[in-house]
Length: 349
Image: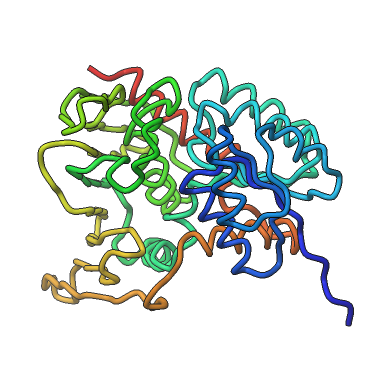
């Protein structure tokens, strides 16, 4: 049997997440990274040596001009996504697009219009990374789909961190610049929150009303040269079809820690858990036994001890391109979630 030819991939963006994509593509084994693109000569030299990629460029269009390249990973800051994604699609390349897909509502409309012209190309948004591609998502969804807790009427999610993006990515100060990032934790983590929680409901309910507050200017950095121009704290109340509601608080750089916790309330029971793959694998299930006795049991998600969300993302993208799998976060669905995030920001008090 002939050995399958490796997919040739260009990674546009040489920051922290670009390194991750290069590593996971290699670990999967079905792809070969043949190009990297960076914004500065210094970064390009560093990464070309570190990552041992055969071709490196300051002009990403040079990589797109290589006919041997089959797919592109856009891993640069959000304000570059529209230009790079459109150019990649027009060059006939499959596309793995980092989250958020774009930085503004106008850019979102332009990208959707362009993607519609290339139905033969796979376009996968990365917001399925910590959500739909890890074992906890399917485990929880199976419980809800079984009807065990009845009809879901309310979701509540809360996660607050005192740290910000740059504590774990010191070179990623662009994430504190609204012009480059689009927003702060509303975009950085909000895409995952909605990907997980709305996905549990099959992405069916439509948002009817959004009430929110957004607050910035909270984090004071020891390095006075660092300034945050994005929001740090958000809370929203979403009203959906059929009376379903979603209470949602998210923050980075706030003056309090609150553990990642999701609660889902149904007419016959409820669930409580932390949705990230690195959180506890335990799902608390509250309900009623025969005779009306209150019950509370803990179920444990069966998963590898070290589930790698980034490797799962890479595998899914390559499955879509090479095996014809259906993208679990197509651009149209990512745009639906991003539209909600824009509404949270635009309607904030």
